Length: 298
Ligand SMILES: Nc1ncnc2c1ncn2[C@@H]1O[C@H](COP(=O)(O)OP(=O)(O)OP(=O)(O)O)[C@@H](O)[C@H]1O
Ligand SMILES: [Mg+2]
Image 1 (tube, rainbow, N blue to C red):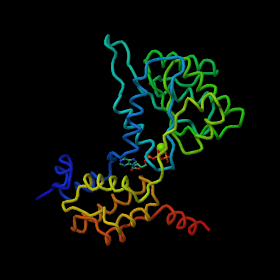
Image 2 (cartoon, protein in one colour; image 1 turned 135 degrees about the vertical axis):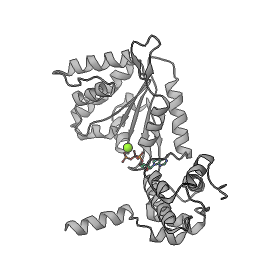
Image 3 (cartoon, rainbow, N blue to C red; image 1 turned 30 degrees about the vertical axis):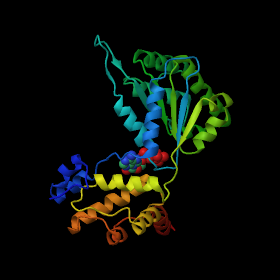
Image 4 (cartoon, rainbow, N blue to C red; image 1 turned 45 degrees about the vertical axis):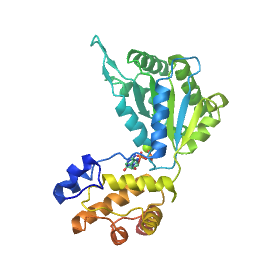
């Protein structure tokens, strides 16, 4: 079997039985692409930034389902917690939390406390939460705080939003660590309302995919990791346009369409993706799904 079109690690998977490959396709796989690599480099730079009074921060913004969480999760996995040299405690270089959808300062601090592994994360007062969170962040020598879904700040009143922005500024100053906010474009609106924070949070935008050179590189990467025994021609003009229209341009939908097409190509024995498979694959675009549910509901 000639499998030159696949990465060496994927060649070993391509020889497995159809059932085994279908199972493997269910788990997440990482595909590198320009914006993601840039984001990872900037995160690395931030993490190695020496402590100073004004720490730089970063904001990763993009449409939903466009790979934001995958990037920060990949980064976090490159900096997993480890035991201190004297084995007395754990060191957590990069801490990732989610901004609660019903954002209160207490809940936010509880998220930090819980993420740092404390069995008790709920205390009676905000002050106590703050104290414990700061103590744990110091004890675990956290050097970067990533806050996913940071746009949830906007769910609170204008007063609450200001309070949150103050807390972010306070945490950055107090612990001298970079803060990375991740969210949809509303996140930018939230941060922008505070001048001091705005010029400390440098945005990195993950735009929707377009039919350009970057997109071709992305499809080439997909082609080299999807465990099919024959090469597909995803870079063909018609196929590219079809993938972009059906997926509506987010990497999440592109991945979902291509994964389903791969399953279909394995099941049919064809072992490569062509226009026919893409058109027949049991995949609905976000708009089609919305329409379907609306029809079911009304
Ligand atoms: N680098 C990547 N390699 C492979 N698949 C990816 C990659 N990035 C994203 N995906 C696919 O896209 C899906 C959505 O990605 P992710 O959860 O990171 O989106 P998001 O931008 O955080 O969305 P939301 O704003 O809704 O939280 C993932 O579950 C995965 O299937
Ligand atoms: Mg996400």
